[in-house]
Length: 250
Picture 1: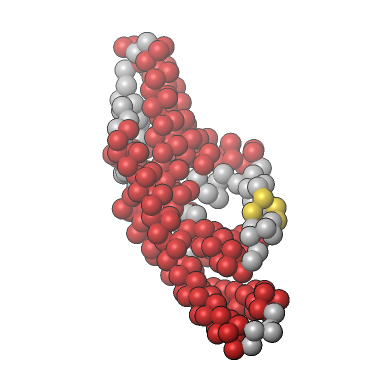
Picture 2: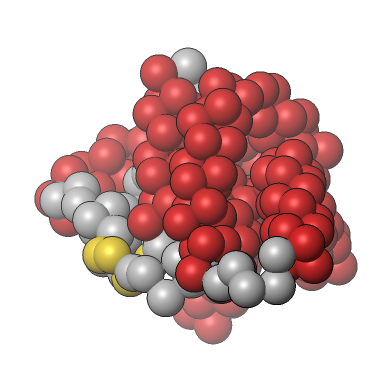
């Protein structure tokens, strides 16, 4: 009986970590995926990991309060790992939002069919292109690899090292801002050059309505630069993989 309880507790801990991980990680957390598919996928992966990495906890020596704490520990691990990956997934959309502000499209909003939230169209376009490239390169396998490696570093039932998890989340946030600005930097330079040209024209021809002329020029240049920039999104794939290897606390 105690053996069955121990097996059940080990499975629940694995299920808790994987469920918390998939709750926030990109692709798997999308609202467009049916709930039944999410539940079936989570249970199937949990069964696999519970067999591959069984828990060594003796159920007879654990009280109900300690069991609840162990489950809370697993939820902490899963949420921290998923949050790091979700933050590292955001630089492409962040770069698109920076460019949209330069184009004057900051007020334009559309409904994101993947997450059900309102977002800017250009950022959504860039994120969609990146996701298609990511999935076509089997990037979702990185998520499974990350959760697998987490059981090597943090076995089921271990007390979470909050400092390590918090450091990973903070570093992922700073990397998101740096990489997002890096992706948008060439387009920002083009807009800066455009502003200099418009300033010179305003001095040469004061009667010209610079505001009226600059709006279509900014939108046109933004679309042109994004079309030129689009193939370089694929190069972010390797950088994304490297950041996962460095920042995940596994």
